[in-house]
Amino acid sequence: MTKKKILVIDDNEDFCEITKQYLHHTWRYKVLTAQNGPVGIDLARKHRPDVILLDIKMPVMDGGKVAEYLMEDLSTSNIPIIFLTGLVMAEEVKEGGGYIAGHPFIAKPFRIEELTERIESVAAASRAA
Image 1 (cartoon, one colour):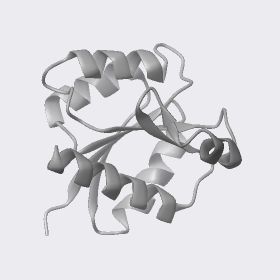
Image 2 (tube, one colour):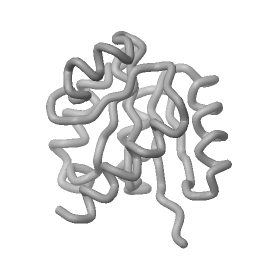
Image 3 (spheres, one colour):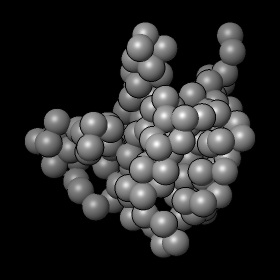
Image 4 (cartoon, rainbow, N blue to C red):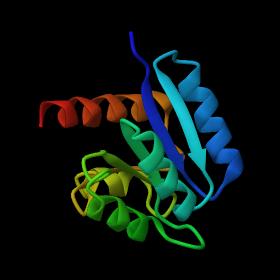
């Protein structure tokens, strides 16, 4: 089985490392991390991950702007993005249908099962498109 490549873009280094370790221990993912938008964009262009996990609120460049750059670039425009945010609570995610600008989002903190289910869902939808 080929591991899916996941790119985590979040300014919190500890969050990136913990998420990387959790996903790595499922044996289903290879995880790359970036602590800011510009580095994340470069990694996405270079490695073409299967899914990008993107924090919304970051210094240097917020997640919305990062998503814009990725969607405008033909080399990265087909990579599914899952927004991660501490700005809303899990109940608000459910009330809002779980999407921001057409991209799914997950409230922090989240359960690893919730994250892996969402990763598998968007990756399957991307392959089917």
